[in-house]
Length: 381
Ligand code: SOE
Image (cartoon, rainbow, N blue to C red; front, top):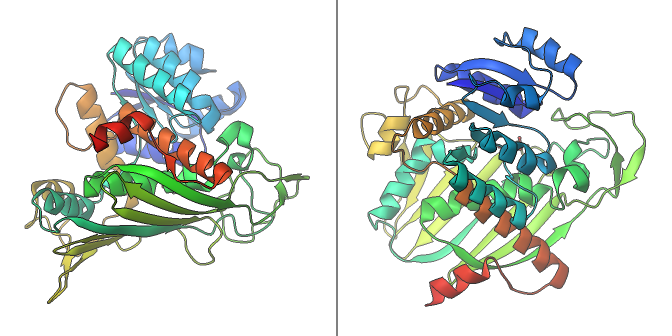
């Protein structure tokens, strides 16, 4: 695959490495200005120097565009790439509103292209193991689903990022950025759909410096820039409920000291429970009423998908970069017409936009709020 990465922040570099790791060609990179694009094309050793997205879309040799720009730019850029006949890997959130997310889903269908979204935590081998055990009915009917996604990179009042600005990042920050991962992962692994949500969002720093670039640095990173009022949340407390009445809860924070990227969930069923911790992804805890155990990643045992994604022997730790590589590999396989399991696509992007939208509406109204009214009716029928 000939790939171009649009947007050269922290996540753009992760995409570029994954392109090469799966045997793709990094044909180009487009950053915020033609000069910056030219410098990065050289630094990243890209094949072609493109001044802007239009020149990428005019190049018939480009197969896939990786959209890694600020959230508000995703719909127009991804739609333009699809209409130019390119496949797309679009960073999450795919859109900052449901209407744009649906527009993209329709554009994918009309252009007969693949759009994949990096909900990459689905690619931890042991998440696949839990998902396979769910499918085999090991845990029984769900009793409760709970967890959290905690980071601390926005703890300092000086920490900032384009996501702080609702015009560029969307009205929701922490929930759209990381709560979206938790919901995607849990719904996919547990095989459920939440139907309703109620939520409280909070801003812990009323002002932060205004700044273009991403600051994903140590806590307390000092940024010298004028301060502006903050409207996007740092923390979220969210209650969820399926149409069958199964309750869920998730706590989301980007200001929890010492927590770097702690996505944690527990699925409690009538016959057993399962726990996954993204920062300790080499083992899962499986709880039973009489005894509990820890299962470790091992390419020699377990579900077919766990073994497929376990590319290193047991005890040789895999992590986030391996998930990203596996995701890009599967996305490219789907673009080549192959059947792959569990690839997050435009439909998942719409689902995620609906969840974010429902959380914002629930916080506005302080009521139980339907996530997707048509889905609620379908599940109840
Ligand atoms: C920043 O919060 C971030 O990089 C997210 O944007 C990613 O999606 C998440 O995987 C890690 O944290």
